[in-house]
Image (cartoon, rainbow, N blue to C red):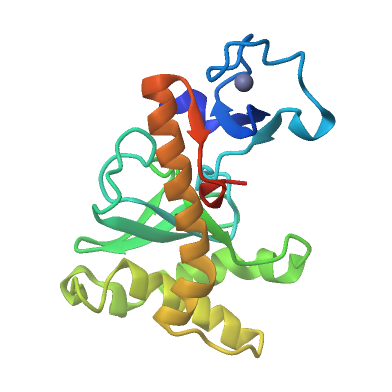
Amino acid sequence: MQPLELETGLIKFTHCKKDIYCRCVPESCPLCGQSAVRSWKLEDAPVSIPSPFVSGHRAQCSFVVKPTNGVFLGEYDGCSDLHVGITSSKGIVYNYNETGIHRDDAGWQQCVWVPLVPPDLYALIHQWDAYLEDFSAADYWLSHRYREQDHNCYTFALMFINSMLALQGKKKFNKNEFTERFVLPRTRRASKYITICTEISQNYFYIIHNPENRYN
Ligand SMILES: [Zn+2]
């Protein structure tokens, strides 16, 4: 497994009427052995599949998710604990756990992310870091207040998101609404991508036999 390489994305091409994912296009099709190149029609031409992961330190003003321990690609088993945080406009990840608030400038290199501010909302981006710092400094986020079930990293992130929405006169989200609408579509996509990468790291190719499993 070479996680760093796969972070840059995959290639998908079509041959033998199947979608085939790989790191780079091979000379011959792994199914029929014929030249993978010669039979290409325009609709079968290879397309690049971008990685669903970004570095939290390059994602400004975002909600970010990573495994509590380790990284997604090559290590995450699909059911271990996840940890979430909020990034500043400069890629510092603010996050809350049983030891209190942390302002991480490393360790969030491979995240699923939800951008929270349109890149042209300069006024909000300009104030974001000050709001985030003030919000994090509250006694509410002292370490002894932490409760794994209901006063945790997600509570911190969602309360900050809701406070920023309230500031803009917008409706708040409860945990389920935010998760279903913004987080799950992205973690599902990441999970499929991990499956494809795992298969490629073992067999060089991931071949879709059932079009319903297609990853686009
Ligand atoms: Zn073929």
